[in-house]
Amino acid sequence: MSDLVTFFDTETTLIGPGNIIPTIVCLQYKNAKGEGVVVGADIAPTFLRLLSDSKLIVAHNSSFDLSVLWKHCPETRDAIWDALDSGKVYDTYIAYRLYKLSTQGSGTHKGSSLADCAEMAGVDVSGLRGDKKSIRMTYGELLGVPVRNWPSDHYRYALMDCMYLE
Image 1 (cartoon, rainbow, N blue to C red):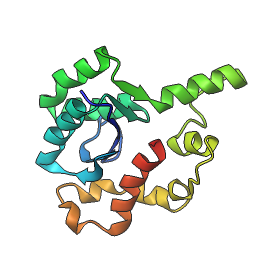
Image 2 (cartoon, rainbow, N blue to C red; image 1 turned 45 degrees about the horizontal axis):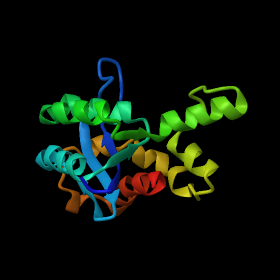
Image 3 (cartoon, one colour; image 1 turned 90 degrees about the horizontal axis):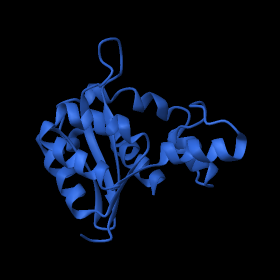
């Protein structure tokens, strides 16, 4: 196993009644070997390769991303358990909430978004604020669309999450 650290995220259709684990639209990742956004049949093999190649995988609210992968890419289930059991998953959401608890006496969900976490670390998060929120809410429209046909803003937004995790 290498010392490779991989940052990953998923974009999905919207959460709603009867749809608490929504359909995965894409998996995005960034590590020292490169970055990418994958869709469809490429999601599971890419995630399995990332897990195999990486010493650590980092996500913000990994319970959501891993649940989405678990539901929609069942071939990843054993690898997800193995990664969790071996301590290979680092969650910035949990780390940030623990930091808030220790410094502010409150570990509440409010103010624990990826943008909040990155901003606290001094990162310019303007790409995660304002009108970009509408992009985040429209990935369902891209379900089944090859990445090469995506609007450039959607592609950039997906990769920004991994950049902010880094």
